[in-house]
Image 1 (spheres, rainbow, N blue to C red):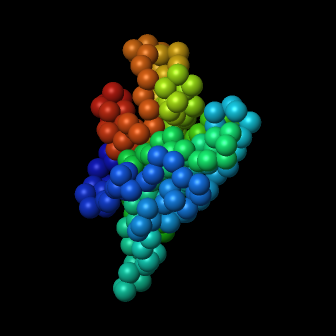
Image 2 (cartoon, helix red, strand yellow):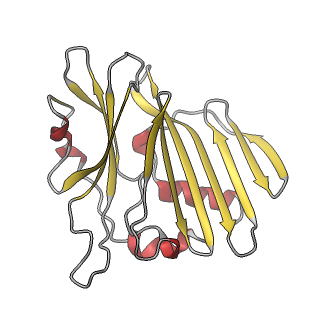
Length: 219
């Protein structure tokens, strides 16, 4: 399994201290706690109020390489900030286990930092990640603002496992709005239903999501 190859890096991975991130502030910089920095900032309307909101991809503020020249392991976190009508900024979510660390890409990335690709399309926050060696795992998470709870809710999760030597590919796609899960093995696709429940961005642990998908797919 590709997931097993990540163990060494993830065992020592740091998680962000959510208590250091304010619920409200007047500047985006206030949502970046000590020891962290902004790796990427996305601006888009996430809650359909015609005001710009922000997704801050944070990374540990550590040197990219150690004294030996090897890449250092740097954890990531995702902070969602909404802008109110009065111009003030409000924390809408902190995902501390959603984004993979810089050394969690496995042999596929070697000494290159593994990315965590975050983008926003039509109000939907999308996170794409991959890692592995011969077997490559690729995942996509989709989140949308839920007006009832005022939080970002998981609406879709795609998982695929591909053997780069044999070309064998198994994938799974789950729609949490409809409760439909589709599994594709080669050219065959099967569908099943799952209980419909709300899963919020703070609750998504990418390691656990991948482990559970691998068990379902008997990988």
